[in-house]
Length: 252
Image (cartoon, rainbow, N blue to C red):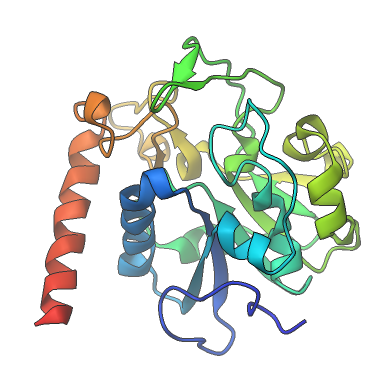
């Protein structure tokens, strides 16, 4: 399999040695995907390739076939774990949920990678108080919740070769979302500001180490009417306006 060809690239080019980023895609949240993609491209100082993980494409290609369970709040609940496979088990790649807004250069996150780890992510200690999220989806509670929402994968790591399409289609949510194919010392940690949970993480005035670099609207974002006024919602809406203006310039 040629690296990156299983899904269509969404920024029109394949720069040499570019960093692959796979964004979870759900048709109900198309706007959030577009803004996440735009925020990454706008601030990146390095070449990046962005691929939407679209379940329909994966099914057409015979890569994904599992039935959707009642607790899956998005179409990419399980397909996200195909990231190493989709990267041909080579180099580092990132998966991120579509409900993120990037406020800083992705290179700064990539500079934190350590080859000794199979994956790296924010080690949230998070138990949501709400029973529903986004557009009424059930809010499930489990250990390591939100760890899998933004993951740097060391795709060439021997342990990640376990993540074949067969395993991703067969294994339980617990096995996948809790990284049970790995030992704890193979799961590296990055600062929480790269997966800043709205409603959970807090900015401490004067402490730059708490300023978000990537905002995660995990309960729901401004693309849903009922979440228009959520915390940091104005930042997302401003980014949307910029995104639309840039698209209009390209059309003109």
